[in-house]
Amino acid sequence: MTGIQNCIVFEPPFVVTHIMRGKNVVVLTGAGVSAESGVKTFRDNDGLWENHRIEDVATPQAWQADPKLVWKFYQARRRQMNEVEPNSAHVAIAKLESELDNFTLVTQNVDDLHERGGSSLVIHMHGRLQTLRCEKTEQTEHRMADDDLNDDYAYCNCCVNAHRMRPDIVWFGEMPMEMEEIYESVESCDFFIVVGSSGHVYPAAGMVNVAKSVGAHTILVNYEMPINGSDFDEIHLGKAGEILPKLVEDWLMR
Ligand code: BV8
Image (cartoon, rainbow, N blue to C red):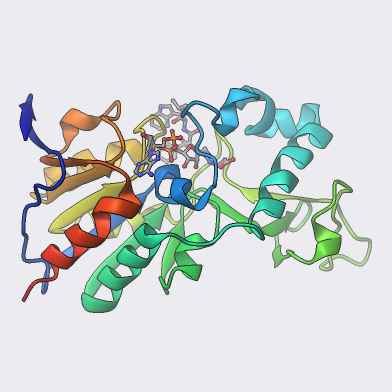
């Protein structure tokens, strides 16, 4: 156990027992929670951004400039969704939801592994790979059939003259989804837990400070110290799939 600045870093097997039953709990996840399922993170070595500049594949300008490059980048990630399974971190978070009366799960991730791991209410603040969005009406459709996953553009079913669809993803410079609902939950929580995020992307990375401002106890579960590590009251370093189940067990002790 080491202390850096004003937070305490726990190395397994240390755990801290909190009584979360009866409390408002918000969990925010990032790419690290899906890493043990084989889904590439963004900024780790061999991450998604390793072969691409963010500006070239995850901005509206990139979509305008080179839609085929962006489309192939996302179609590869959509196809991968059929090859991966939720891991024990997703299952542990679903258990937390099932046992608590006031629980909110917000994810930066665009995969559906939380849902497949048993979570019933998931706020995807950065969008979803499973759905595509009509460029004219902005209506979304769940499009994961084989015909939807090749490198040809997909076209909508909502317009008489079908329009090309875009990934239903929040790109850099675009407004994240459900922000009002998210801030409502963060501004009224007793525990704010982040799992698997490097703290690079805003406004998600700033939510720990919103939680602290309302007196919540803030906990981080991450493989390594992230850029915003000192914002947390309590940090557990390790692989989420390995350490989160035990933490959840302790947090749910009666
Ligand atoms: C916006 C979809 C206006 C794409 C993504 C200040 C305030 C507001 C905005 C900004 C600001 N400063 C800068 C901005 C602009 C920008 C931004 O943040 N830029 C960054 C690069 C500086 N933000 C925006 O443009 C956002 N929009 O601001 O609108 C606004 C302003 C205020 C309020 C409302 C609106 C839109 C950002 C969304 C961009 N889209 N995703 C896609 O997925 O293809 S972001 C992308 O990064 C993913 O969603 C990803 O989840 C996210 C964050 O990354 P992480 O999840 O943290 O992943 P990463 O790889 O970085 O880290 C993984 C971590 O896991 C590591 O720490 C690793 O150690 C750990 N790990 C690995 N394995 C494990 C593990 N941990 C545990 N167990 C393991 N096994």
